[in-house]
Image (cartoon, rainbow, N blue to C red; front, side, top):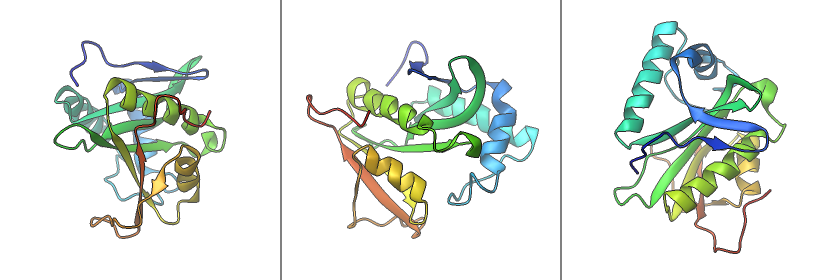
Length: 182
């Protein structure tokens, strides 16, 4: 998973780019806003220091091949509006978990769907993953809908031992002739 350069991904409307220190305000917002975090249990970044520490730690984990974390922005505006990542890789690097968040004013506009399609393609085509998992809160209807739209299937046999309120969705590497939802 070693990359010479960070894997910049571009879609019709979006750029999925490396997280920068200049994103600290967006990180602080995304990791502290009550609406964004209503279904997520995670440490907040409600101060400049916490946000900068998160960015530093995230970029360190990228260099150690523990995750790939993209800042989502529009092609015509580099301001971070959300994030999407592949992380929690299996020991054999064949399975990873996808995670994502998006500012509320950008939700329900197809932005995360567009980003997810690109990241799924990257995960399966470039990283050669066999499976991608998503853990989402059972009451997070937007997230469940996004996952189902992108051909994830609920695995009813698995429980998230760290958060029993979560459901676990999975998608296996598609056959060469099957595309994700467009």
